[in-house]
Length: 192
Image 1 (cartoon, one colour):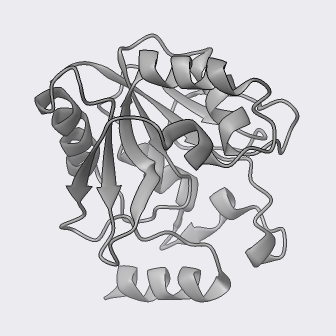
Image 2: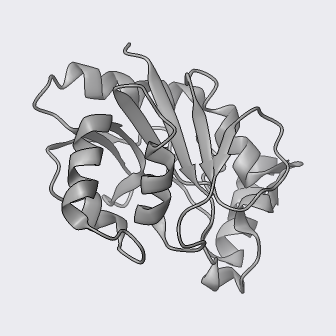
């Protein structure tokens, strides 16, 4: 498998959670952010983009411009700190993400050949998850340069035009926590 870096955007407003610090919320006794970081142990460099907060893992930190500028601004900030030809974008609210899935995404990108620019996890509902995906770093940089100012842009504006391989989420790890109900269901699943 080709070496890879990871960018974890972790600076969102969490509007559906009333502005709570979503990456700092816990499932079990571990924060959502630390659960994602635990899945990234195979990365050469892991970059967390967002406000400073304690984590259990050694990571590089940066902040999107402007702070709270959205996922494309977070990717832009994170890309400044990565050097691998492959980079994974992983949401900070995936409590069941695991190292096996991270490696599977990186391997799928490798196996797809040079024409494939992204390997994106598809959840059980058939929705692709651009923040549970592996990308060719050069392709992301090229797409980002074509956008101009990244602040406030939706992630699909950056990733939508890339040649994408869809990867089935066979282990249901793409479950994210956008609402208090989602968080409670994740906690129940974790206890079960």
